[in-house]
Length: 316
Image (cartoon, rainbow, N blue to C red; front, side):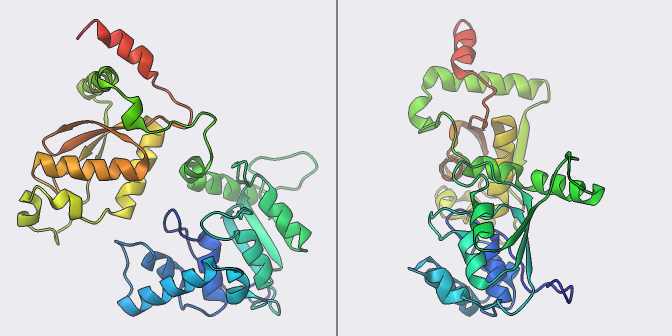
């Protein structure tokens, strides 16, 4: 709130298919929920800290939002009489996906000014969100990540823009279409390429450069469950763990999952790693004990699987 220096709403994007951060902030600012951040947490299936009633309330609100003219039903002019600035890490979306556009929701609510930390490079947005806002009379400021000619970008603004860029780096990769879609990796990777990935990971492990991700310790998981071969099919997928794995795959393409904190049987590790791979469009190259080798090409692929398989072919 500009005149009172008061935060009237905040939120974050909980997971794919859910509304973006702006919507949870608007739900709080317009009085539909008490806390936009907690509401976003409650939308995460296996990490909710809310009671069942609160969780259901959020789901009901999100169903309204996804319905025809849902943004107007929830937000129409609710902030029109207030001098509100929205600070967003990433440019508000302007396209219809599984949810309505965030830019139009901000307009519907009567937001006067929007400060954008990072312009969305996704071709479906790429300045379109800012244009929707500006065309509707909203004052828009996009932070500059470097000093520009004919601008008065301050050091504080540049630092904030760089921080926003770092925050959204992996998210932008997830939502931006690839120049060449990778398709179904399980269908594209044959036995020769799988063996090449295993050999490459083996060399990385030997020289200490193989990156590993550990399933977090959870004392609510009993030893009986860990020894159950089918538990890998039932255990909730920890959202923060998935995000960490996703980020590591973007950065390194091939990683080792250590799952001994959740499963003690190879079958359980296989079931669990396949679920993780399915969530992240990755490929399980190998399962050994309670470890699994995951592979997914980076946004700009580094490993050339054909070349890798060709080099290792003579060593088979």
